[in-house]
Length: 592
Image 1 (cartoon, rainbow, N blue to C red):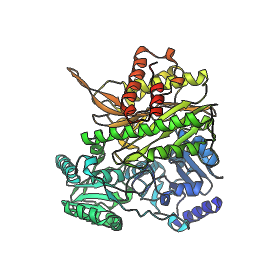
Image 2: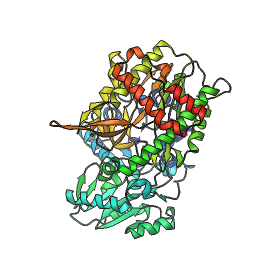
Image 3: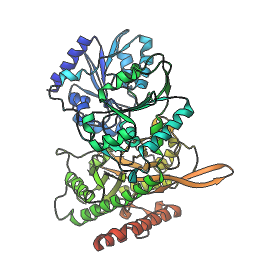
Image 4: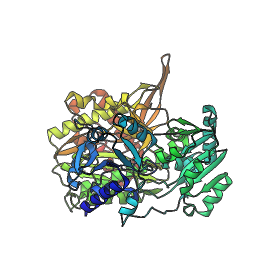
C-alpha cells in the first residue's frame, strides 16, 4: 500500500517536471497540530510524529525529524523511507537536497504549506546550482483517494468575563500599534491569534480550540475569512455589530490582490504561507515582523491571569486525584498507560469549565518514558507497576485557561541512579523557577539554568526547556520559549505577564525518563539603579515525589523552595479535597 503511494507521488513528480518534492507537517496556517486532512506526510511515510519533513526523489525517500522522535520514527517508517536525524552530524534536508540534486533541477512544494520565509531561504540556498522552487500546489488532492474531509465545526463566543477585554478593545489596541508603525493594513494567519483577537473559539483541530480562518485589516475594513456556515446567528450578529465583515474562507487570496497600490501591509513571513504573500500586489510595501497580535496575546491581562490561576487549581486537583488513585490501585488491578490516561481525563472532565484535553497525554512507563513525546498505542501499551518510573505529561482545556503539567513518580523503590537523575532535573527546575533577571533577558539566556546541574554530571536532554502557553488556546504559544538555540522562540525576551512552562528532563534510552513541568508566570521582582528586574511565580499545583529526591544533593535554598512550594500546594488544594485525598496531599507535602 505504502509502496503504491510512493510510486504515485513519483509519477506526479514526472508530470510536474520536478526532481524532488518536500512534504512538511503543517497546514496553510503553519499550525503545529493539524487536522487529518493535512496529514499528507503521515499518509505517505507511516510516521505519526507531530514534526518531520519528507523528501522524495526518484531514487530516495527520506524523513527528517528531531531527537524527540528518533526511536518512534525508526519503528514507524515504512521502507524504503530512510530516517535522517536532524541536528546531528547528518546533513539537514536543505544541505542534502543541495548535494544530491543536479544543476538546474526543480523542487516541488505546496505553496499553501510553506511560509514565505522558508521559500525565500530555500531559494537563496539553491541559487548557486540554479535549482528552482516550483509551486506544484496540492498533489495529494487527486492521489489520496480516501482523504479525510476538512472539518466543519461550529465556532462559539468566548465570553469577556474570561477574556478580560472585548474584541473591539483588542482591535483598537491593534489599530494604535498599526498607526505607530505607519501601516494601515495587517494580515493575521495564525489560528490562535485570530481566536484570541476576536474572542472566538472553535473545534477544527483536536486539542486546539481554533477554527480555520484568516483576519485582515485593509482599507479601514475588518474582514474575517471563514466558512460562514460555522458561525451561529448570535455570534454573526455580534461580529456584524462590531463592524467585522464575514467573507468565505477561500476568498482570502482575491481580497489580498485588491489591496490599494502603495499600501503598507504588515505580515509575518515566518507564519504566512507563500501563496498569500505572492498575492500581495507588487506596488504594496510589505512590513515583515512578528505579528502584533502574537505579542498582544502573549502578555496576559489581569483577568486572564486570575482566571488562568483558577484553572490551574482545578487541574491540579484532578492530577492529585489521579496520582492518589494510581497509588491505591496499581497493585490491585491491571492499569496500563492507556487506561491511566483515560482515568486522568475522567478526573479532569468533572472539573468546572472543562472543554477537553490540551494535547494527547504522554502516559509513559519505564522505557517508554525515555521517549520525550511518546503517546501510548495498543502495540506499545505497558502495564504500570512498581518496577520503574511512571511519567505523566498532560493538560486540559478550560474556558478559563489551558494547562500543561508533568510529574514523574515511583510506585516502588527507585534505584539510586533514578533518585540522582530526578534530583538533578529538580535542581534545574528550581534554578529556573527562582531566576531573577533584568528586563530584556531572552529565553536562551535563561535555559542554561535548567541544565547546569545535569551538565556538571555530563548529562543533558534533547528538547527545549519551556514554551509559551495559551489562554484556552494552543498549549504551545509564541513568541517566548526556553531553549539552548539562540533562534526561534528562545531569541525573544521573557516579559511581564507572559506564561511559560518550566520542563527540564532526563532520558535514559531503554530504561526510564524523567521530566518535571510546571507553568511559570513572569512577575516583577525589583527596580534598582541598574534597571527593572523580573522573576517567576510557579502556578501549577501538584506535589513532587519526595521518594525520588536526594536531599543531600540539594542546597538549603533548594530545600526551602521545595518546602514552600509544597506548603503552597497544601494551602491552595486542601480546601477543595475529600478527607482521604487531603490526607494524601498532606503526606506528600511534608517538609523534607
